[in-house]
Amino acid sequence: MGESVLHVDLALPHRASGKVREIFEAERGLVLVSTDRLSAFDIILRQGIPGRGVVLTRLSEFWFGRLADLCPNHLVTTDVKEMPEAVRQQADLLRGRTMFVQPLKIVPVECVVRGYLAGSGWKEYRQSGTVCGVPLPAGLQESGKLPEPIFTPTTKAHEGHDEPLTYAEVEQQVGAHTAARLRDTSIALYRAGAAYAAERGILLADTKFEFGLRDGKLVLADEALTPDSSRYWDAAAYEPGRSQDSFDKQIVRDWLEQSGWDKQPPPPDLPDEIVAKAARRYTEIADRLME
Image: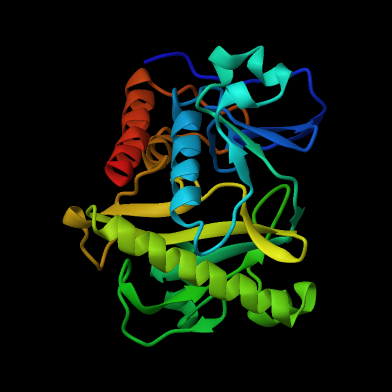
């Protein structure tokens, strides 16, 4: 494995740092760099997953292109030769993990779509028969497919956890017209992504989208259908009634859970074997979806 890229510094105004991305301001756009950083339980680990940022960028570019007929997106280019000089000066470091995107007025809602009953949705369903307040039929199993995909938006928290929003709260926040566009577009994108993935033996259990506005039009932003924003399962191993293995950082979370860590800083160092397994998991989902 190569070395993980954990930090990036460009001769451009720095807009923000996320758990994974560094965002810089440039003339006529933004530079988004996906590092190899990895967070678990809301804490950034000292080690990264080599190549993880490249996988996230490759998949976002792929899905932006594939879904463009359903919704325009903010991507301008992933070719560092076409980016500002400050990026070109570090082309070897940034190639494959950098997007130049159009600036947007971001809609402050995380647009989550669920097609299967998993994670926090399963926990809520067992207690109340709902997911994010959406009533569901009785008798559904853990990881079971829902009768129809459901829109379960959340807040867009800058720190900590996102909190569920009812559809009525989304309407109050952004207006009825924009809320309907967010819901309908998100579900359409999920359906298209799920259908394509299914042809390649992959189940798209759920995903989240972020949108912005440009000249009043809804534009897909941030990332699209990556293992960070989506729960992917192997269809061949799928078995409702239990939790499923996901193509994401689950391997890392499982090891941390078993390590005895109290989930407070500092986190323990990951064994090389766990880092390598996680890297292979990210590469596998990208290769299978893009083959």
